[in-house]
Image (cartoon, rainbow, N blue to C red; front, side, top):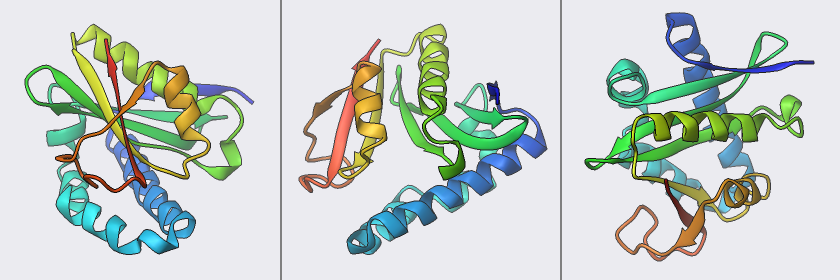
Length: 168
């Protein structure tokens, strides 16, 4: 099995990303049944549906970027980069399908995003994750992200929402 990370550009690749984004939110609903209202609030506040409908305006250069993981040419994972302020970016919606976990694909996706962020001169990459993301939180820390508190960010003081950043 060989994994490959590609920059999303074609209509077919964008469709794969859209499918994986909704799978990601389905995954969150199963893992966090006590947070369904928070997940719905996030979907609405972040305008996820609108962003996905207008993908090119949010997740393709020059506005942002997105990466698709392929395992034996089948789409199995995503991560998206969205501008934040003048010189920063957000890492959004890293997700790897169950069938592809444990193969280092999340790390490859994170490294691809950070490499592109550095190439673009991004100052800091920000992300939010939910507290029981046992697979993702150690990965983010190993990539250099550190936790911080931000009462103004989504989830505010809710300790179930983990805020992290990496100064490049």
